[in-house]
Image (cartoon, rainbow, N blue to C red):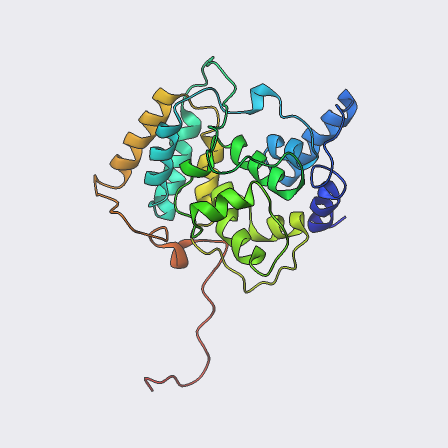
Amino acid sequence: MERAEILNKLAVGSAATVPQEPAAPAALAALATLAAELDLPLADLYVITGRPVPADLLPPERDVKAMEHFAYLASHCDHAQLAALEAFVRALPRTDAPGPFVQPASPHRRPAETGWAAVLNGLLRNRGFGVRELPFTGLSRPTLHQMVSRWEADRHRQFRLRCLAGPLGWTLPDLFALVGEPYSEELRPVVHCRHLGRVFTAAVPLTTAQLLQASEQVHRLRGGRNTGAWQPVSEGFVGQCPDYPEPPAPAGPTQFG
């Protein structure tokens, strides 16, 4: 079965519509095997299939401001820095921390309990994010709040998926397949690619103190440079992301002769 078909079948009739009853151990073991085969976080497959995520797959209880700061700094790394940062984060020791992480309540909108809005909110929670803690995605906070409370199919959905796939660590083809949205090869992430999201996924087990360590590492990797207040695209994104190689130069004469 094609990868896109597997993802689409996982979502159809699951959390996209109705929460599921607790599954038998054999079904959960099969889910873990599938997560490994697809190279996707097991916690995400729990969310997609409408099952409660086990506490040991969620981030520990931690300061959301520490995660917000780390995410902001990481979002300005180039691809070489992202790779080094991911390796640093994965090498940090795993500790017994209180948990699991609880998303901060929003005064604006209540997250949905069913539908794609609930799936999206679950994917964010798996990484330790509320809407306010996300780095810049190309979407406004009111739009993000609307998406986790009532996300309906409309003409903007492709654009929104392209904005969020990267911070979630999902490829565009996978996320489009999950949602059942038509995908074409010329589509590109609006702001960040999945390599930023891989760092956030690696950081799931980190405590507040370790997130601060990781933030210090970003400063070291970037030579102490200030990120500034507005950089909507990771530095070097177009030329460095291996997912989107530059098109070959046209054959024959050019405008320069």
